[in-house]
Length: 136
Image (cartoon, rainbow, N blue to C red; front, side, top):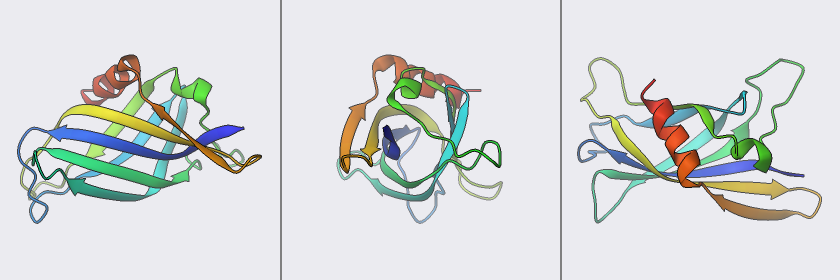
């Protein structure tokens, strides 16, 4: 079965990102009623546009649901879009920065039966659901 393994994001922020000043941490998602997150996140500011943050989220965490059940996100779930898409941008004393738009999402799916990774680029509809969830 193909299941979500990693997720790559391109976020456009409302101002240039200063890695020494701004705290940006993507995390906290829900697709098709299934909550999930990732244990690890790596981000880099785009060289050509300092308002763009490229993110790689890895080590899927599917333990956010019932204690007895491991959450699995499938391709079918992804097509339903995001009900929650959260990006934490710091505490009270941190300089303000906000996500202007989720520009791109690429889901990395893993099929353990054949030991194969496939990639799914988010459709405009899925990106809209992520962006709509940011404003909640």
